[in-house]
Length: 238
Ligand code: ADP
Ligand code: MG
Image 1 (spheres, rainbow, N blue to C red):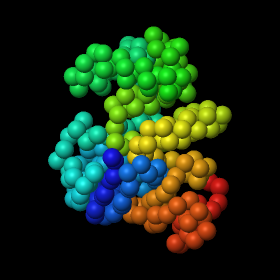
Image 2: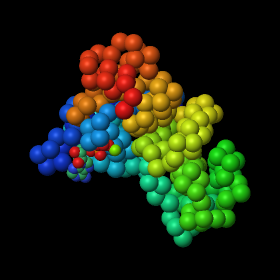
Image 3: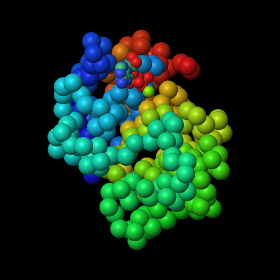
Image 4: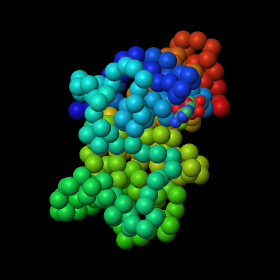
């Protein structure tokens, strides 16, 4: 389970209104892509969903339950950032298990889950290394592994591939698509890369200046853009 419902989400920083009333339905197991120009509020929206930022008003429901007052750790959500945010002094294995350890999960269960995620991401040879001894692509896989071990209902990815070179971006994108199929989890994924959006998404949400311009499948947006903004964003290379 991992459906999400946003109703009238508003968020202001001081007098600057960054999210201007966002409504969105995400079905369980869906792969949803957020696209939109830099500064339009994509990261802020993910942070509101994750509970890392409080909305000024509006409702966030996960599997039908209001979570606006639920702390991030209790929402069943895991977030993967562009910067991997790994602990430099911990091994890959301990980086992946740390969240579970902090949540009080027992040691044997942590071992099992880390081993499973590590196998899924081909990280077995690197478990004893520290982040400085890994490539960028490997670090991002560790960050994804750290999300997987928590067995979240909902994964949030904030431009996870933008620090990787072109070849690694393709490879990691295919891995993420594979994970989506295997885990059957709901995934929300921010990107400014059109190829990522068109190939990964069940549904694309086009954001502009804190509001939703259009929601639809890649083909719907491509063939029937609601307006010139969407047409420009989906139809032409950026
Ligand atoms: P995007 O991810 O689409 O590039 P963001 O959600 O990061 O956009 O930012 C949207 C707007 O909100 C930007 O104008 C940004 O400067 C502003 N903003 C984001 N976080 C904060 C913050 N903590 N305090 C003040 N303004 C912020
Ligand atoms: Mg952002």
